[in-house]
Each structure stands twice: as C-alpha cells, then as structure tokens.
Length: 315
Ligand SMILES: NC(=O)c1ccc[n+]([C@@H]2O[C@H](COP(=O)([O-])OP(=O)(O)OC[C@H]3O[C@@H](n4cnc5c(N)ncnc54)[C@H](O)[C@@H]3O)[C@@H](O)[C@H]2O)c1
Image 1 (cartoon, rainbow, N blue to C red):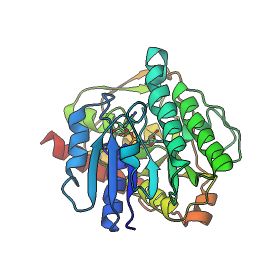
Image 2 (cartoon, rainbow, N blue to C red):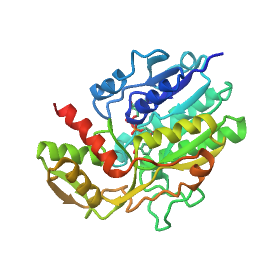
Image 3 (cartoon, helix red, strand yellow):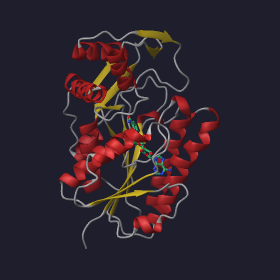
C-alpha cells in the first residue's frame, strides 16, 4: 500500500512548507484546509499554488469541525494536524467560539476517527503558549503548563486530547510545542511580518510593551524538519518542544530587520497585550535526543529570507 499523509491546515504558513518537504521526499499528500477568514484567502491560495500541480498532491477544501471526515481519511497512513485558529490576541471575546471549533472540536473529531485507523503517527501542532507566564526558563516539557490566553487554553486542550487518545486507544500521537515561527509565508498577524511591511511601506507599527520581551524565534524550515522527523520516528504519546536557537528581545529583532532592509521601522508603543507573555525559551534537549532535531537557520539569515519574500509581494 502506498503512503498517504494527511496534512491539515495545508494552505497555512507552516502547512504549506511541510507539504513541500513531504512531496520532495516522495510522499503522497492529501491536504485539507477550510480557508478560514483569519487572514486573506488569496494569501492561502498563493501558498498552495506553489505545489498544487505536483504529482502526489491532492487538495480538499473542508472544515474539520463540521464536515464528514470519512472520505478525507480514506487510505490515510499518517496525519500531521496543523489546522487551527491561530493568534493569541484575537482569542478573547466572542471569537473564542471559533477557537473552540477549529482547535478543540476539530482535533477531537480527527482523533476519534484515527482510533479506528492504522496510522503510523498522528502529529499534533501544539504551542509554547501552553506554558504561559513563567520565570522558570528554559521551558521544559515536564514544567508547569498554565496558559495566559484563551488560544493557549485551546492548544493545551488539544494536547491533552492527543495524550488521552494515545493512552486509551493507542493512537500514536506526538505533540510538538512550536516556538514563534517565522520565514516566508508567515501569517500577516505575526510580528516579523508586520514589522517588515511597516518598513517597506513607511507606516508605523504597534509594539506592545517596551520591546524588551524575548521570544525564542524559530525558522520555518527548522520547524518543518522537526515535524517531518516526528512523523517518521516521533515517540508515541510524547510531548516535545520544537524550536529555539534564536532567543532575542523584540527590540533586537527589530534591529535585525532594519539592518536586513536598510530601512527604519516606524513604531509606536502601546501597553502589553492581554495574553502576551514576557519571555519564551525552549529547552529542546528532548527533541534533540529523540528526533535528532537541530535548529540550523540563524536569525539574520531567516529574517533576510522573509524580507525577500515580502519585497517580492510588494512588487
Ligand atoms: N506560527 C507559529 O509561530 C506557531 C507557533 C506555535 C504553534 N503554531 C501552530 O501551528 C499550526 C499552524 O500555524 P500557522 O502559523 O501555519 O497558521 P495558519 O493560520 O497560517 O494555518 C492554519 C490553517 O488551518 C486552516 N484551518 C483553520 N481551521 C480549520 C478547520 N476547522 N478546518 C480546516 N482547516 C482549518 C486555516 O484556514 C489555515 O490555512 C497551528 O496549529 C498553530 O496553532 C504556530
């Protein structure tokens, strides 16, 4: 039987890169996406256009929270579940219902279906946001999880579901806690994307807080490699930090972008946003040991590639 990998969220930032990596490795991919309106559909279509015509790829437009999953899952031999409503700040208020549908309900439905299938792995994209506000750095998988945003709560719920379905039904789930991902095709609500656009367009961008908050930025190709390896050889039932290598303050990151573009980033400061944490830092020893994971792309190099991408869109 030939393999058939289901990638959910295929039209998104990380899903589109992962799909290219899988196709490059000769794998067959069925990609699912609902093309939600969190950011423009045209950007997602452009992501998919990069590989839509390649052999071994099939696109299905469907909503994992409500549509029939049986036809999508037919013949599927492995699952990478990236589909989600992303974004920390937008997760308050009425839009939380969307987070519940896309992040919790969709995950539970997929796991429920996977119970009766024989998939080699079910990789679930979790997030460093499950840790919340902590001084206990670096963030270790065994450390406390106490999300400070509704988004983080839904990502942690998905992770718990993944572990439950492994323990009770033997679904070979592997949860990966990604740390702030950047690079070409990055979502337009994410900081680097906004900063680069602000510099190119000369319009001011909002920086929440004084810019001394730190993030462990991870280049998308490194995230993809960790995810690819988790699909191949990830330890079922485990939760792993995948990220790191470039922990800097927001102010330092802004300087790197300004240097890459040779342009200033006009900015205004506002109070820290609800749900944002002060610091993230990945302890990625477990992923290094179990997946041979190694972040390779330096911040300057990765930022230059994201700048080139956004410059090409600006024409
Ligand atoms: N980008 C990051 O820095 C980061 C960090 C930590 C975790 N993550 C996680 O990684 C995954 C991918 O993130 P991304 O940045 O590529 O986001 P993205 O928004 O670019 O991609 C997610 C895709 O999922 C699709 N989707 C959402 N709900 C769906 C549904 N109900 N049915 C079908 N498709 C649906 C969206 O249309 C979108 O194309 C998410 O699970 C996110 O929580 C991302």
